[in-house]
Image (tube, rainbow, N blue to C red; front, side, top):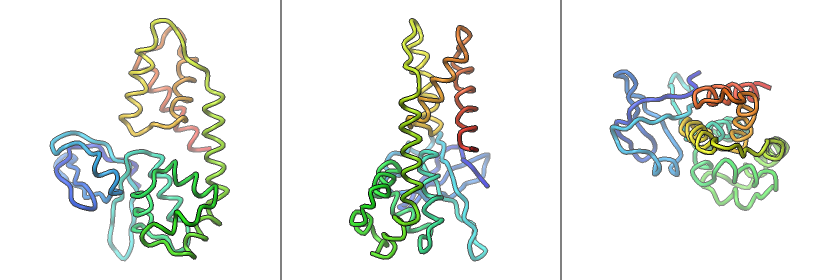
Length: 209
């Protein structure tokens, strides 16, 4: 499994981007909403990926954040939803919006997306409603339980660490909670490198539970 690809953007087309990594160009299909946010060719970017092997063909699908990539994987677990339909959904809705829609069983909004009929919309809600609720509940708990950081001289350090994590594709309340815990454990020895490392370790552990 290829978790992410980091390299130089070589170009893009209407459905994806080409990323050069050590002389190898990877074609990665992405949500159309993400393509408009990519840097210009020649700049470095990181894409979180999911590899699909079907009919002896390998296809890479990429996302701006781990949350979006994980949402894509959840969608693929629903009967009748393939990579193209899942990509269409995430082109129209952010991962956070989709979680809310699934939790509230808003089938009408799902049916407005190309490739989603009444049966598929119903199946999405049936299969993913409870999972969506659980994810939203966990995020809310993380946000409420994370300590509020207000330490003299550490505001810039917090911002720099959060910026570094965001650049790596993290950007949810889950990230802020992990960073807050990293601050608490680092104490006076807190440094940018140390904080980012501890936060990443915390995020990795939370995703393996």
